[in-house]
Image 1 (cartoon, one colour):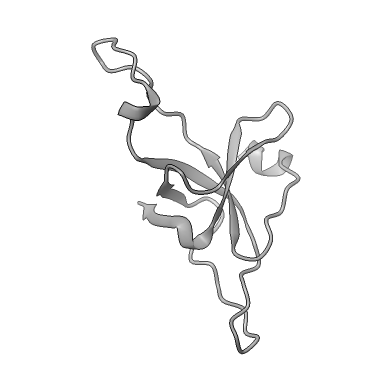
Image 2 (image 1 turned 60 degrees about the vertical axis):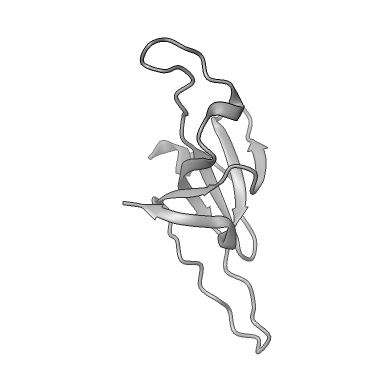
Length: 102
């Protein structure tokens, strides 16, 4: 994927950089959906993963996703990131990822 090579952003600790998937804004009948009527979860592809956070004993906790995974997270989790003219990205905590889509 060319996006992985272009993005010069590395998340820290337990954060994950995700490229947001395009959401369908119209129904098959042509009705435009407002944000409030769309799905509550967001979907995207993992672009970069932080190194993991430290537990109380000083051991690094592994992040359960890897680059290339398709993931789902809560609509209101994370921080939107705009990188030059690239598509929209979001940085979410690993704990905010609710599923890996297979």
